[in-house]
Image 1 (spheres, helix red, strand yellow):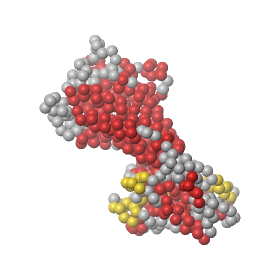
Image 2: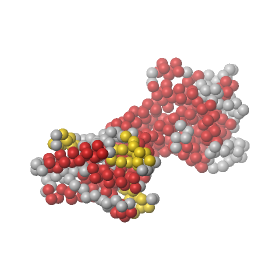
Image 3: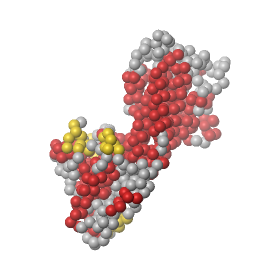
Image 4: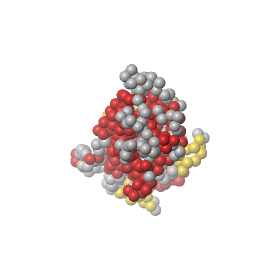
Length: 511
């Protein structure tokens, strides 16, 4: 996707090339403007014209002049083709549950528009221009978060999205919930009347799970980078050794994530006085696994999330409609397949969930270790309390981390391992990728809180090492936290402090 300058600043130009995760985030969260590129518009027009000529031949074309799913053998008269598409959208808008967050809906809109702009869906360019106009006007359809089995596309969520294009359903505009017709009218946007093939193109796609996946991959990257810094902070707060960060160990293992994790952690400790202070005559032989095996565990999580990120990035350049239109020399080849099936994303998002369990779990163990204060080589008080007994310090912060870890363990069960048959047996193997996506979004939030608790607690632990200084990277992390959260002079509610650190992690400020 090219980026050009428009009246509202840099905009993302939908030109048929892949979106990047960063572009999705900038549109979904940063309200970045979007435009349909002239070349993509021309390609869409050519594909549509070729499709119309093919339709004139009178043959049965799935989803264009037939019913859908198990009703695919029902031929629809030419006079009912437009109604067929509108009714498809209306009937499939059967989602339930809480509405998807605004950023997820914006991500859906831009990913859908980019997919249609690749000119294999056979829709008119006016449809993409409508979506672009809604994005730029800040109009967001209300999309229930549950209802997709992630196989014939994210049918229910996308149908709710598409309802708004017809001026039906509900939207949010300026934070206010209203009818779609009122929202469009307030922005001077006219709804569209769908034509043949267009309703199917709008709801056949993985755009719900892909939107969540793109946002989650962005957040997971910041989280794992912070987790490496938190590990370095913990090493000095707990007076652990850095011997296990020796690159020769990790080179010998031949796992790239492990080696990179060790490099990141070690870099944060460069110049540490704390390490030097206990390098000689320390009676401890080895540290607990949560320190000594941190590169192996965190590195494995980094590798797993990195693989999942690659799957999402490839999906952001794909077309997940069915059937697909391949226009050439004014003719249209119409090919039915299963690009709408969400299994590539489902497996990747499930894998990312498991990776976050490991990253959060080892973080919680380090938090437990320092609060237990059972290492005589570290001069910390139990629970880092200012006055143990009278004050409880961070005792219950570890409980909160443990609770989050337990929920992460439950969420890690792979949704993609289960199947429920739909559409009278025609759709007999579904991905459940939308469930994977919903769970991953929750997992990122929980893992962020766990690492935030570690950072908060270890910043306090580092105070006990004074006047010694840690490495420059660790001290920068400590300073960033202290700018928001003061030292624990006496008992106070840790919840606001945990929330403040978690926000910093989510914003990338601690990465």
